Length: 432
Image (cartoon, rainbow, N blue to C red; front, top):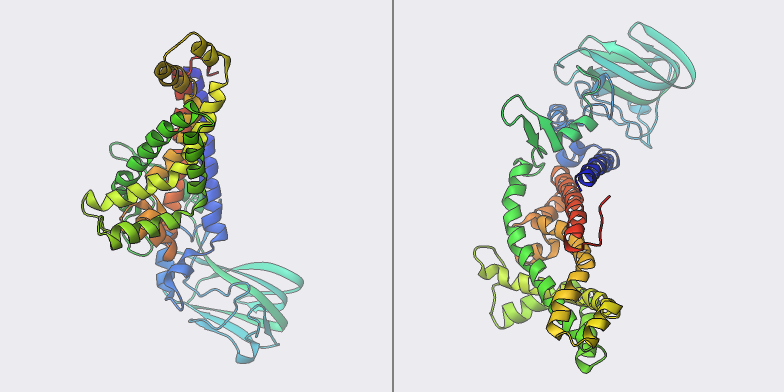
């Protein structure tokens, strides 16, 4: 058992590292520059610089000795246009915004936006003849060049015809491995100089409210658990009881009715249950409040809807497990020997069906901690699901990333605990 747990922990660490890597690629590479998404149109260069430093998005992706800076405005590939601090000849500004074309004697001038913290490196991709400071060159194909900017401005002039595709500015890195990826790892776990010397889940600040993401999650996990734990245990308990009745009287009128209602419940959209419950029990009969979070009374209706909406799939799953188990020889022998029905179902059947029940529970449990997006949104419950919806609407990448990573970590942990629980509930299972 101990050797198995150590082996699974090692594999779990690899899975967690893979989850962090995939999440990093999705939120850093696919989502683009978060500063542009948060600050909107025409932000000041110093605002961009501060936000990039806070998010770590100015650092190299995995390894490098230079980090991005807005000390001089950059001409991005595919978005060349007149920017604050950049002077471009009017006739040279491209209509398609992609390639800047200069004639002999024309030049692009970059004025310093603010005083940088170190020497600035300028990298530009060009084709043709250029003059930049003391450097000159003539290239037949697109070539990347680098020069050091030690003044308050930089001129890039055409020696003949010159095409410029990209101009970017960089500051030196203290450590080459201080990258965006290592910053993503430090968000999950980092080491400190004070007790307890380890810090977990520091995802920085929300991009919209500027509140620490960790505080938002700690505040939202209690409402989510108060909502989802009763839904989980209620659905499991009622579903197992109904499935036992259905399996015990298989092919009877009771069994057929339970199966028909279960299939109907699975076919109805989750939204239909929510809207009907709010209108019928909340608005029409005023049995429950339909919005807010202040006492247990506000949770009763969403808990009821959560249980009813998930019962269909649960009953169908448990019934299939029980019917398959009832067809096995040991239960038929127990019946033939006159074993009481309550003992057959309560002791033998449930114990041997515990493995698939645990498997289903393991797939549901991780979502209890991140809450229900629809229930919390429709009923105004300030849990993690509600926070996730707000983060999506406001493009709060820090909050979304935290929820994704925490959900993945909980999923890995619960799967490990489930595998260990298999050996506890079923002696036939051997962990190797």
